[in-house]
Amino acid sequence: MATATKKKKASGNAKGKTAARKAAPRAAAYTPPPKFPISFTVNGQEVRAEAPAHTSLLYLLRDLGFTEVKNGCEAGDCGACTVLLDGVAVNACCALGVQADGREITTVKGIGTVDNLHPIQKKFIEHGAIQCGFCTPGMIVAAYELLEKKPRPTREEIKAGIAGNLCRCTGYVKIIDAIEAAGGEMASAKGRKS
Amino acid sequence: MRGFDFAAPTTIQGILKAAKGKKYKFIAGGTNFLPDLRHAHDGLPQLVIDISRVDALRGIALAKGEVRLGALTTMTDLLENKIVAREAPILPAMAAKFAGPIIRNRASVAGNLIDGGPAADAAPPLLALKAVVRLAGPAGKRAVPLDKFLTGYRKTAIKPGEIITEIAFPAPGKSHKWGYYKLARRNAMAITVVGTAVVLKMKGNVCQEAGISLGSVNPAPSRCYEAENILEGKTVDLVLAQKAAEACRAASAPIDDIRASAEYRKLMCEVLPRRLICQALNIPLD
Image (cartoon, rainbow over all chains, first blue to last red; front, side, top):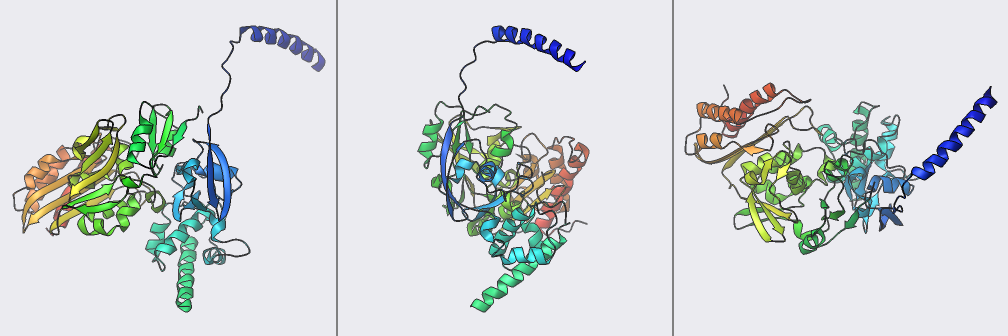
């Protein structure tokens, strides 16, 4: 039975294909969108890339292998893609890749690595502020900027500082605990140094 | 996607030159541009011009009694700038409630206004401050008062080839009183349900000049001229504040939407201005 069906299909297709080839108009040759050179640094490494102008910074970074920058909403609402652009926290989904030309990007891996954890990362681990981990890179970058601007934030200030970073798992309390603790540790480390 | 061309000039003249004869779109911070790109209501542009590298569009200055905000002033700039904090604290009050900290780092004042949206948070305080929008274009420079610049739902008086260079307003002075309230469903990252701004220049209890505006309750953010007239030249008390608030309510034409009903918004257009006027002037609300 299967063979019979196959034969039927084959002949049917051959007829269709010939008909289709005759009817199709000659389409214009495909031209891809223009690509633009983007020369920038990511976590101190020099990167040279090329991308169409419509590529967001988020897509550009992820395509270049910086997959720690997460895609949560592509609308500037969730903060999963938060990176530092010339030291300023931005949503990578709301910038064009071409806008990064000549600039410095810092992702969470530029703040601390597995071998060299930043106090914020240490406290996130210690306080159980990570469940699925998807919001964590963006959350840490946001926390980093917050603690730069306000070394010992109150819990209300922490909430305001992470207002652009959504977490579906933790309920935020342990994230706030971790940032508060990190702020304390960083401030006392500074105090000891001076 | 067809893809577009891209230019990143570093001067205002460079912007005007790049824009000439093209179906272009400007990008500054990108916080409206990128999310809107997927909808592309009016089609994709041929050319995207990145204006964020034009230093002439940045900076906040106080000159000849006027506060000048460069078009690229971000909401974070409004929060951190000392001139604005001293001369027009209503602006950092608005900025503190605008979206969230990360968006604020990129969202520009001009971008918020040019979007023309009814809920543009920067508009009510700037309207109450009687701000003017300054533009540069192929025909030269011109200035349009903000209340004439915002012409309708997502419509502004900008002409093709023009760019906003700065937004300026007369410094309201040390004795001015002000109030700002953003009614919304969340404390952050929320689209405004009713936005209210009040700027009052007082001499004792007498109001010399009033700027009162509402956002999210009309096709475009707008001033309540009748409410302003009710207060100007008079001693302001609760009765007068109530009259002005009623005029605000009458001047609003809100819609029902997913965030709130028109009926609720209409009521808030009376409650919030009355509250702001009274709080600004230390008039007990009871």
